[in-house]
Amino acid sequence: MTTTPKYIFVTGGVSSSLGKGIIAASLAKLLQAQGYRTTIQKLDPYINVDPGTLNPYEHGECYVTDDGAETDLDLGHYERFLNVATSQANNVTTGRIYQSVIDKERRGEFLGKTVQVIPHITDEIKHRIQILGNSGDYDIIITEIGGTVGDIESLPYIEAVRQLQWDLGENNALVIHLTLIPFLSAAGELKTKPTQHSVKTLMESGVHADILVCRTEHQLSDSIKTKLARFCNVKKEAVIQSIDASTIYDVPNLMLDEGLDKVVLEKLALKSDTPDLKRWNEFLSRHKNPKSEITIGLIGKYVELQDSYKSILESFIHAGAENEVSVNVEPIHSAYLNEGNVAFKLEHLDGVLVAPGFGERGIEGKIEAVRYVRENNIPFLGICLGMQMAVIEFARNVLGLEDANSSEMDENCKHPVIDLMESQKNVVDKGGTMRLGAWDCTLKENSLAHSIYGTSAIKERHRHRYEFNDDYKKQIEEAGMKATGFNPETGLVEIVEIPSHPWFIGVQYHPEYKSTVASPHPLFVAFVEAALKFKNKK
Ligand code: GLN
Image 1: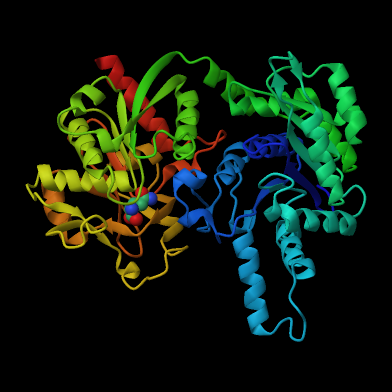
Image 2: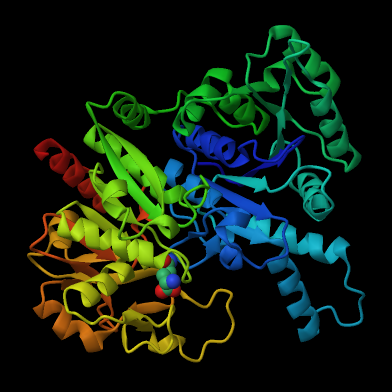
């Protein structure tokens, strides 16, 4: 809709975890709902090339895009809000920036010159920021800068923003600074000083915030807004309150009420309209007015952390709304689950999801959970490692292959029913070398998967090294567990089911990465439906 792409930079001040990703996604939603083709990019100042090698304790879930990028979990929010796929270009890290600058240096591209942070690193950052804009696919690019203003590692990014704003010119770029207005209960007051200081820190780097989005637990009075505007050099209407919301999906409407989209569009010299949020609001109303409730057990080893299974939790929100059911997800730590307590911990559940994961810790608990739900006809969804555990459980307890395992857990096990993929056998590097991204899958007719998807050709995102071992397929199928989804080129088994069980399905891929508000994932929708049916029959 616009000729030159416009850029919005989102920086953070005062504290981390203020929800820059949600603010960026909400603003993008409002702009998209007015007809602007909008995308969001995340710049992460850490030195890892990507978060694929970070464990969830460090950085939450690792999100995977269609093109196989292992990315920050904020990209999941972007896709869930916008229903538009992201790619490698949407997540840039310091590691990646330095890697490409150093590669160029080795190729002799800077021959004769000293390679420096300014201009070489900042040029590379500017180039990465503009890749999406130059693609011609977008009118507006929102670039979220990870970390907090004042961090040493953010400096080159802030400098790149300063230069870019200058290069792009008036009305083509703006800066939103997300900040915290703390409430001091002893004084009974909201405090603006930390914000004044972080705006000042930003200014010391030559960047002026055009809009302040203020996270707060209490309403900002008119006088506080006036004060912030005066001290921070912004217009009063550009002081936007972002009050704590009961769900992240309320934030676009809250930003609309505050007029964030209007201030942004005016500053970018773009026309503003009333955003069309009809479908979004229909989803919200279904989400907030459930007709019934179910409880799903989430069996994993990072269950104490909200962010480790982010996309799974959000997928349940989408699928719950679709079914007008409130899905209560009960985290169950797999490491503390055993034969003695499994019935006590799982018997009240309406469905069980065994989570993805890596390594040995907690896998026996996951296998016990699968046994319990298989024997007790409880709806089951196994994702990636969860699917692999279902295969191991079946091999051990139905086929009687007692030491069946995955060669990830026991390299020398007698029955590696889950084994390293052929293509992985000579891989030494850990970063970015798994089977990643979207792969075709063909579904067998008359299978549960086929009836759920309503088609025989699907594409789902992967992130794993191990796979169902074909040497055991015949035995496993004869005993009643069927392989119902295959990669059309390699024949790799992507889905297993137990047709004699009311609802038992394990998938080697990650359906949770593709569930969005506008398009809830069919597997999650069907799983919630099966759990509701199971509950109503109890
Ligand atoms: N660790 C398993 C593998 O690499 C499963 C990975 C996952 O659950 N994402 O195959």
